[in-house]
Length: 177
Image (cartoon, rainbow, N blue to C red):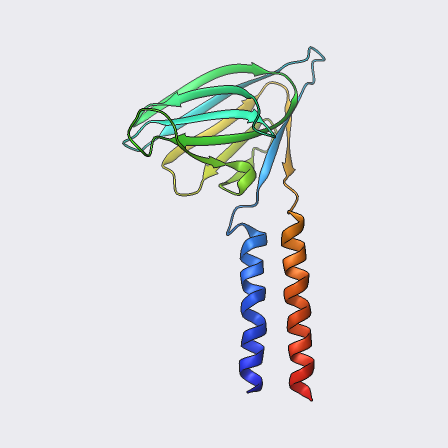
């Protein structure tokens, strides 16, 4: 009986861990920083699509109200694009056409844990790896600077976690009596 209670306590904590961890990819936003004091951030994006379908990618305001930059990436292609946006905190996405109408309708966002990242040693390049997508390369090279902004966990996750922890402690104490 005691063993079953311990497993019953561990299972909800494991589920909470998966929710919090994003299953391998923590949500993040990218802060584009203006170092030239000209109210713009210049960057180059190199995209390597090794899939048999077209993808769209873009940079949107953190609240998704405004697209700042967008490009399509043809099937089995390598693209290099230069662009400029105003400084700010942005959410980056990759999208594809799931219903066959030629328009993107399925999105994966960095703010939702759909990607991982690494930063070059000189701090000027951001490499993004998208979960389950066939991008051999997704690299943003900055003339200015950037920073990664972790997305804070929603309050509901903390509330659920503390509730599960409380239930587990109560079960454990009741099991001892």
